[in-house]
Length: 332
Image (cartoon, rainbow, N blue to C red; front, side, top):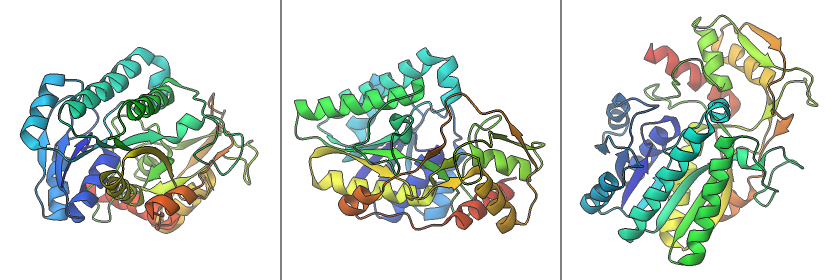
């Protein structure tokens, strides 16, 4: 079976490629390297001792994508490619709507032309907005608070409409919560350009003395210690969720949505203190004002993924913190 992975050099994409190869799939990566590096290909091959086929191309380029599908005879697609910085999406909404929607529409048109109707789509828990109840189930109300989340929700609607028009499609929509951690080898992990938007890369840079201190946005939330609570999931667990989703769409038609998280909430301070303890390092921090739009708590119900995909997260917060720091120590 040949799986095409858009954005396969990125953080979640690269870990998923490793798990695909380890599970006997052939992998074709299409990535324009706008937020990733080509040497990730070598690292994926080093970890798995298997070859991948790589095309440096933009998924918005219909002609290039059509040529790749003609050459590769793809069985299914995992679609990661897209811009993903929430803050940037607020300041540059047109960039996000143009790229994230165009790339997906182009991909779907090419897939349809080549009769490849099996897709796993990388969505996000941001489609839930501020949750009315916890844990968040897949049938919770959908409401976005930024353009990034809106592009994910629009694409989900496009995929639903596509299936209504043609019941041969098999589509899994995966709503991620907060992926952190890195591969045990330390060869691949999260390495954002510039100052990180997400908590764990920021903690790591402070621990590594690349940044002076961590800013914790607010300590007056309605949570156990006043800091925001999120559902953090190890990226390798998340990658394995994609393997289960691919198995499902290859076997069945239909379109379905699954939360991928641990079902547990950890506060910012819990993450910081666990990181300090397991890695024996200091992480200086200061409390600053809340960010607009941030919510008290957000964590998933994972019952549906367990029941339908036979998948559950296995790695605990200690391993997430250890593996995140191990990656940075090995890559510097």
